Image (cartoon, rainbow, N blue to C red):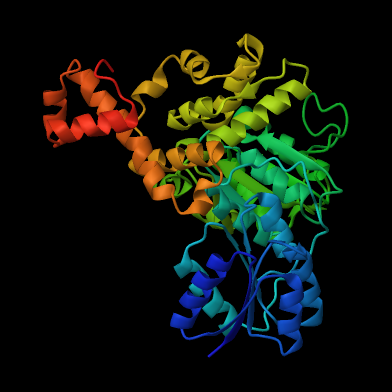
Length: 467
């Protein structure tokens, strides 16, 4: 049986976690503040520490760092509602064994505690300095939280990373985050699009050439590997690389050195490789269009970026970020209304985050109003959102977010269930009345109610027969 200390200022969260961990066979202590946690630790270190970040008397991550110094073998699991890449990186930086964004899955937390207790003594090495603000990746959806966690775990290493995802999902942003937050950040970040280079120039572009190496080589020119020395080389659209160039790249990755065209001796390759593609490389390997050995060399750490349609809840957050960015570049300052964010969440975004960014820049220029409303967004999208397919889960999440924005206290009052039902009931009755031309008898039949019950509900909700 393992001893677990749970630190969270929310009594209901502490209770739920404690009950789940006790059912799993752990001995659980709880604390509602850093000072209370300190007293618990003074009585003897537990096997696992589970802590929130925002606590009434301090920062849980700073506390986790101090705990790691005092108890280097104590695994720390960090929970946070501030589910951003910055938090994930800070948690790993503080020596956290695991980071789970709120709301978290109890089963995932229970498994993490069990694994941490079993592997006590192992601790994530702190390998980079604190980096705050200006992070390019945004999103609080579970899909993006998974991306943040992978980045946080590998950012301090030189492991090769393969980023996959549809066009416009932000693959280069992942590469830049790995560079800017890692130990190579003082050295160059060099990006090259493999699809944009003519086949016959790829070798010279990657590895450079000596003067006189070929006709037109008037002077020595450094290739991208040399330009990125000490830093990160980002190979975008790696799936479009010709087979003969793949062979040369594989040799560099295997031997750790490259030969500029016409050079008498090879040069050491001191770079971290991050590759990206919107293609299915495994399928290309099967088809003989991509070398299997190169695929495995590149796919050491895979990071799959989700399309925006799979993280619709992030659309509003991203849109506001892009509007702020447009204003910083001199475009008119605009703000996004809550109902406009709901419309954005319904769009399928075939162009992903890049399409959303372009839309926000157009709206910043063309919108006449300082606050951009839902109708303006619909017009700019050409009405596409009206036909978008919306899952029930997404609709409920959007409704809860709207209620939270207008009435934050509802989530703490225990009235959320009744509030959500009330929000759904009114438009449902109104829609049926409208469909049946205001005929209450037909509307009641469609709803499965008797006419008197419908009339009572209409009076209660303030719905007139003409709606």
